[in-house]
Length: 529
Image 1 (tube, rainbow, N blue to C red):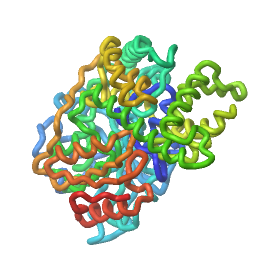
Image 2: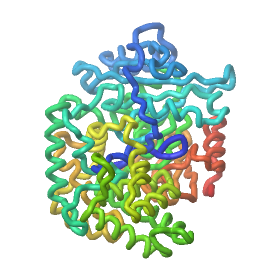
Image 3: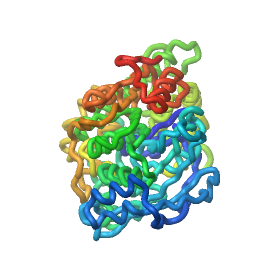
């Protein structure tokens, strides 16, 4: 499963994976939203004169759906962020059976600063996840865009169905504490460091699935990526945009590609940063991420080893052994600070994965050094980065399990059989990721989006951005996605961390901005460093 992003002004991100320990990293990408939550943003959508896009859509859909496309968005200043506008709209719970009822979608926007010919339309933004609110991600992130982009676009974010201030998935339990697999924050309670508790992970997945069926059973079949893509098309029409212009990070790239597959002729300028390979099944997707974190750790370890003060050794191999030893020592005797802070091996792994994704190597070096001397403050700072970002573990799981790519459904026996491949691909993290393989095994709803190629034949050019040592959405996936899309173009960032755009990489930012504002793709084979 993919997560949002963690960088720059923020964190997927995910953008990807079910994990237990803190889910902390997961909100990643989640553009580090400093803890804001969107209160019911704004007013309900009413009805009013329809623009050209609404009129065209309303005549092209079944009569039972036409009313949804004739809504008028009633934008009001957001209660928590008056510089932004907020609204709500109705979408059908089931697009195939609109009589089944509605879901509420919450949205925000920041109006473009330009006028006249400077303006292009709306730029729909998704930070990743799944399960990460888009509204409270956009609020602190909007200032990171260049003046040219701000002049050209209204920045718009919609909390996907099941997430944030839209109709939520409520499992009536502490899903974040029992989930298996927040896709980038491995970490589960292990009775034996060398033998992950696959049976325990399967039991937790069974309990969580049962709780979600009780608490949100009617909603569960209708929160998948395909339905959210249909909601994006509804939003395009209500915004009266001829084409959908879109920026998606991590899981947001999967959402954007899914939209392009459904509505290729409506694609405008689309940027997919941290691309997800839609042909991978759930097991291979988790394995790819385990491998991605190993690559990221080795890159960090090589940099650390070249520094005289590196606390984990002076070679990549020595650093790996030092991390293993720290995890084992903390599992035997967790560090305690005050009444409430207990750091075990799982907590350290969570902090490490966060540091690799950001990337926050200086903080990670400090955390590892402090743990070796018995301190926990630096680890808490890393692990706590996502504690208040509004990420929903219940929504994460509900959305992921409807995808053949994002949700793994292995039995404990199948997970045990796969374990050697995970440990071989990722000696440091493989066993943690193997515990995600049963995450969706007992989910009460079958996946509605199988793992398969998305070509979006006929779509306008789509820009895919990939980072060579991205742990959460490995570079190989961005490369594959760009090749699958009939109009895909890959922009490579030879660097570390999760996603690349708006992380102060001038070459990447300039290339993406030129595409968004002028439609100019970077030359094929462009590599930024």
